[in-house]
Length: 281
Image (cartoon, rainbow, N blue to C red; front, side, top):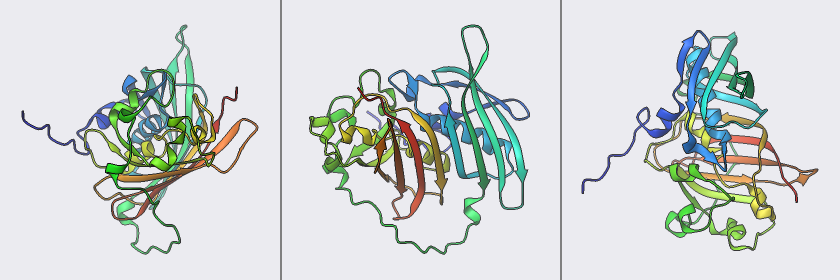
């Protein structure tokens, strides 16, 4: 049997499922794929990539540098519209805002997400790096475990896991064995299942695609994002990514998650912080 060819940037399931169709200036249509759902809601990182792709078309610069999203209502698979506005267009940075909307049973628009983003050209940035950040220490991939090795992380559909290459550090898998560590940490090797290499838009997915750190705090169930800000630092090298997420404070039913994404060249390519709601029982 012939081996399936590896997907490439621009020709992959991720690219097809985040593609938007321009209806008019600043207005885009998309059919949100059910393949990126967790339980019945569409994953927030996938949605961020959809908005990121629309803004890349609307703005004069190609790459997201920073994007902040407020998740207003849960998105569902099906038709949606993205409306964008150019806030400012400069020589090296441009800023835009966008909203993703769907329709209720009466045909009225319901806003799902609102974002504000600044774009530039990552390829034009200087190479100078001065950092104290270190890549996460994760065992070799063959010593880590994926969704196929155990139960689903939440009750219900986890369709998104079928599209990801996800290998979790055993030290952050206590929750799957009924013995959460209480440390609020999650680490994993990460990629797309079809072999497509990472680019700035797929990094927007990577920061929100791992199981929630709430699981290692002994909490199960859906942990919906309230707000997420991602910083894209450089274009990633080919190969698998390493993602590390930590939570230091769960209080009042909310927790923060700080994510770092490292590429195969040991560069910090993306960072994010999100505030998420925890359904305490």
